[in-house]
Image 1 (tube, rainbow, N blue to C red):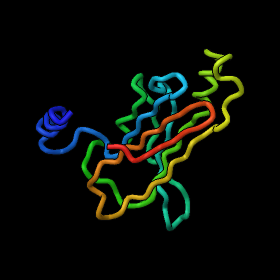
Image 2: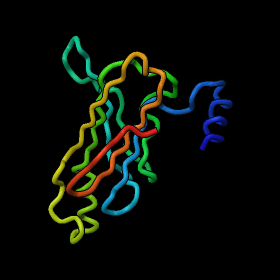
Image 3: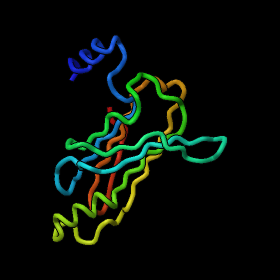
Length: 142
């Protein structure tokens, strides 16, 4: 993994080759990545007191979205929200595995709010989601 990061930095002239905010979703019920799950990244505007959408995407076959924002090593300080459309994903799973998924979605959406302080603006933010039909969890990844 360290070699991959170093190669990306060398190829880009020292700038990271990924979005400063990424995500990875794992379906704990199936024991594999959650492919095709739609997400939206928003930032809270304190002046308008509203969430402003920044980017939309869907997880790839590995359950990742790595291109929400342009590659860079800076993200504006502030409050962010990553919204996961779990209803559509879990309904698709229920159609494929009706006996296994039963009456879903119990959680039709997941919204993860997080704060980036000014002194943390050059860090990478990875927001994983561990999803199952009747629960979810998250943490700050690397």
